[in-house]
Length: 234
Image (cartoon, rainbow, N blue to C red; front, top):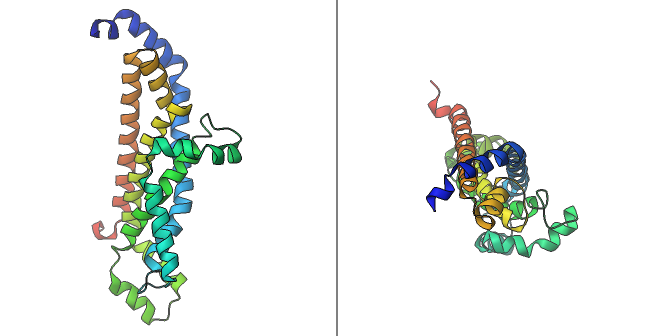
């Protein structure tokens, strides 16, 4: 089997696919990952803030039943496997983008799968903020909105960036899985050529490129988190 995988014919076919299809696939994977992460942060960040600020002893207490509903919804969405979630949101994808297949359509299930995860990451980051700082802000008469925007979020920026890096690499992995339902990018190439056509060399190259993209996102996120961490500044 390995003789066929690494034969001259396999190399020639892989080279043709790399030249003709990989550039667009890399771009599709990149922009789907970045857009999905951005939309997920837009939904998940306020939700994560509410999970902390809305507690009984938080800066903006919310009704207990509402907090319970938020937690149940988040836990419910997080518990659904991504492959099943992609199928479940077909009607929503068709409503928003007009189709259930393709690169753009894959953004909808990616966002729905990611924003509860991001909400929990934001919650974790905000809980790391020193409560003494929050109490000091309250004693000076700061409003809940001011405490959230000028104390809690700024103090947790390094942790938020680190967790955003975790989120974007997770979404990158999900984007590869979306190739099963016709999503574009490297995942589609890996499935179409590696699984359906037994061109394992092409699949191997697609996997290597996905790993490299994860390394790039991780390195950039670590760098930004380090730059923003006041504790590491002299």
